[in-house]
Image 1 (cartoon, helix red, strand yellow):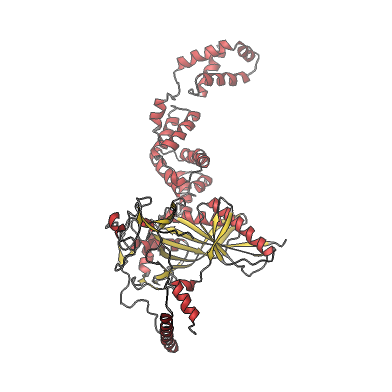
Image 2 (cartoon, rainbow over the protein chains, first blue to last red):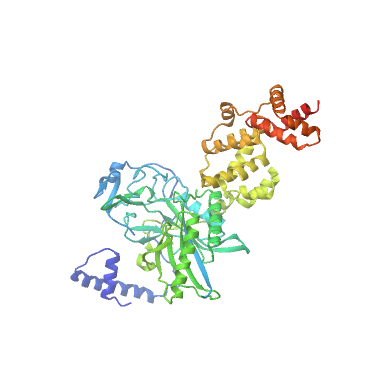
Length: 95
Length: 477
């Protein structure tokens, strides 16, 4: 896949990132490098290899369905950049 | 105009009835104070780690089995990335690649007989917070209590063709999930929400048209109206040689039309990837069998048991079992008073009438079964007649009154004092000398008139058959 400036632009937009031209150039380069690496893997025969979904040899980590450990509202709202009454406040967001 | 066919598939989000959230131990209680059921995990603070609630997996498997799905035994979670303030982590944990349940179906009743609706998949995900837009001018407010409540999303195949089929499908789904106990499915509280994927095509074509997705439906009636409205809009576009655009639309029930929200994102725009914080699941056959073994009695089994053990007709049994709440009420009331057919009659006739009149859902019934049982007892013992009983039942339904106390306080007991009734009837006969004459001339109809006059005088609180006996007695000395 050819990485173009439009693709960089689209990914930045989806990630809500504002990039300078210099940063865009740098990213273009790293995207190429990364995709080349993926291409190398695609060239390998992985027919009998199970896709790895997690790096640690863990599975079935569960907790029981019990309620505890709620945080008081003051602490919950403490780090909010903006709050109003008992709520987090954000710029008007209507879909 | 050409003939068109509407093709509908549904994505139904159901909040699971766990006590705690999917990845943390905050309560899932509905209607708490804003931001009171929150912790660093569900408000997405850096450095926190999610731990999966085991009950969520069990409920989702139970739903999958009841909807005839196969269970994906090697299963994992993915992150769906998008920016919206109701989602504090800026990604939703969901399952794209390996949904927990696949390839199921349910059967619905249609005018043309039974129809099978395919279930494409059921996956687990987390709910988002709630945005409040109208509270103040320049911003929106967020309550994260709902954030992290476990959901299953049930994705149907595009197998439905009319609003009637969609409602039948949703009703069946709701009933199954309620019987399983995996969700209360209250649409008004948002614990069951349906998104409608709809396209139209020329009748006879086997190619699918371009579809739109509609959100924001909070009742079955609104869903039916939205389907009618959106089909019409799409057909009008095609008739005018215009294209339907693939997009998400919001149904506005007041304006009776759908409004474009945004062009439909590609799945790739969400940049899904496996969630590194959640280890994969390996679901053993043993675990699945255990859950299968614990599945509660579903409707078909109940219908059979009600006929066999309670001796009520198939018709009654199928109506009562159609809604879990009614089945519970029936079983609990019969447990107390033993009169199955009588309980069934009260539920099917009076209770269903009041629910319709008050536009209430059966889930909102709040009277105690013991009060219906007592009412039936009062009739049985001849303390009140049926007309009075109906009036008392309305008060049980609305205010959960104790019928014994209510009858006492409002002086509604039947007068069974023979002497008192006799004196009232004697007076009525004296006041109606013509009736006596008519009776002597062989006009039996006059009895009915005299019973009516007596009941009126007694304000309904007499036993009509007793009144009749006394009238006969007095007219035939």
